[in-house]
Amino acid sequence: MSPLVLFAFVLAYFAVLLTVAWYTGRNSNNDSFFIGNRNSNWVLVAFGMLGTSLSGVTFVSVPGAVAHDGFAYFQVAIGYVIGYIAIAYILLPLYYKLNLTSIYHYLETKLGFQSYKTGASFFILSRVLGATARLYLVVKILQDAILESFHVPFWATTLIILLMILLYTYEGGVKTIVYTDTLQTSCMLIGLIICVIYILNNLHMGFTESLQAMDSKGYSKIFFTDPNSKLFFVKQIIAGAFVTVTMTGMDQEMMQKNISVKTLKDSQKNVVSMGVSLMLVILIFLFLGGLLYLYAAQINVASNGDKIFPEIALHYMPPAVSVIFIIALISALFPSADGAITALTSSFCIDILGIQRRKDLSDEQRKKIRQRVHLSFALIFLLFVMIYKWVNNPSMIGVILKVASYTYGPILGLFTFGIVMKRKVKDKLVPFICIAAPVLCYAVDANQKKIFGTYEIGLELLIINGLITFIGLLLVSKPSAKA
Image 1: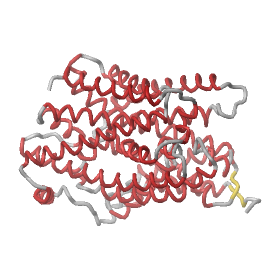
Image 2 (image 1 turned 180 degrees about the vertical axis):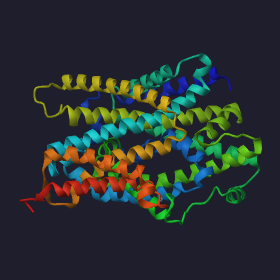
Image 3 (image 1 turned 90 degrees about the vertical axis):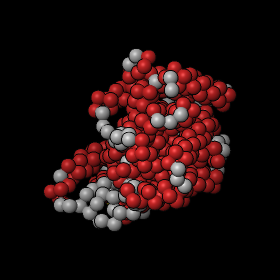
Image 4 (image 1 turned 135 degrees about the vertical axis):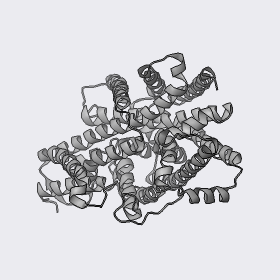
């Protein structure tokens, strides 16, 4: 299909987003931006968060990894459900009880001011690295499919997309994102289903026949039973649960939307239903991955990994399906990028700058500070996307999970210590412990063959990181007077 026609559809889609943003962002204030005035509909939040959790990386990398790992990622998805249940019945009651705007205020109430600042800082670092990795992958596809033919440089493509995101999040924040994410998740799932149906029809196979064909190629294997493998099902399920607890339950972006729901009960329904839905959608993405490789073999396409889905969708499918793929891809991109920039703005303003604590600032002054921070994070996103382009890693989902293991580990250790221990830490030492833990994890990861032999460390690196942080906090703490 002509890049010009694809670009026209992208602009039309963005016009719809702007219309929704204008309508929902009217009369917005700082509470609207940060927590949606605590009046969001739990069904809309759950559905929109599905898109945020999936992102463009899931849309491209999960199907692309099927040839190498089969359906192993579904093991992680099972762990996700366990993690969402833990969030619903352990973390959410704490957040609602304290009426938090930033979840990292919890660390201040339990551990101290430096612990609070450290947790927020690690969130900002992790979210910047993870969100820009997701953004890079989709920008690269849009660059190759559309804007390269107009001789638009890669940096300009990234800047255009970031400006689009800024336009519809600048005023409304969370209040707007709840609605735009719902629209975008709908488009993404419709695109997914249409691509599955199209490939099934062209393979002249039914559902059962396609599974049998995948099985013969080794694509549909779900459970891996070798304890030494990084894909061992026990490790994957446990790691999936911890990844969810940290990357959702201890993440300001994800919880910002949850605590925008009016009541705790509705927020819990939102989280549990979203977890089950996410597991099922990931299974469909894995099924699509198997279909893509079967179809690629039939039409003699040699692409694999992150490249196979865009290659087939844009060059071997009818123009209408190509348009649907691009719209679905953008719909997967925007919820992860818009929510990240909004959450980073919220966390930096509230946790680092402390604008809500400052009595010398008027609401209008707070709004101006928030808008400047919002623009600054957009520029930071541009910088990191260019860094990822320079590095050019072949599988971004592996990069994102590795980054999460290093940066969310200290957050996991901090929250766990605050929840389960009745001890008072030496607050000024907490930042040093949280920096030392990832450094020690890197040393373990880099030398794992020497230390563990044939045993491979995978996603459980996050748990090791959190455990090191927890032990460090234990060493610099003493029994609380209250205890």
